[in-house]
Length: 198
Image (tube, rainbow, N blue to C red; front, side, top):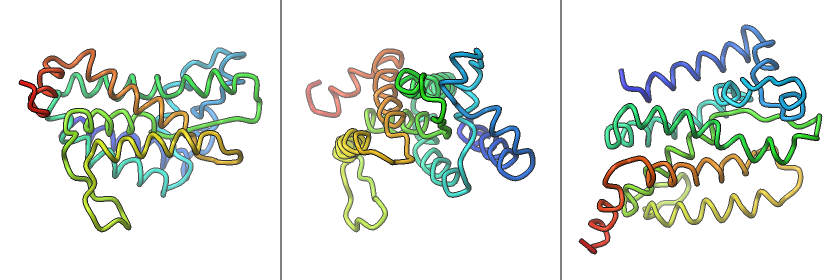
């Protein structure tokens, strides 16, 4: 079984258990920066990445992870994939902690930040691949999708009242690029070859 499949299985079991079997798991694992800073519940930085608000939220994240994770895992290897995903959960949580550490009403959860790290790791390594987006009948180059996604996330993060943690998406996406560039060997040579420099 691939690492991607194991992550999907663990996340699904953890999320379903918290939603339908043992609800206290949700309140224990969700990231509440106000509580975490004051009560030192540091586990929330990680456990929140395995919890979801509902089945739709879970399905979307796991579907995207499956589509891009399997390919990226084969490309960079299991060890790097595990490190990218785990660090993506943590890195994508930091903006929420800094921004909402004094807000007792804020809470966030979901694997979106780590999934964005995987997605943008894929985009970095396969920038010219064509992506097909729901409701858009034409293929979009991966690099163009990445730019559009980041632009939308930055714009949406400034709007009030959204329940989507766009800051986590942005941080996860940036971390996916940073991790691949810093830690995966030969990435620069690979990119130069793709764009005809080498």
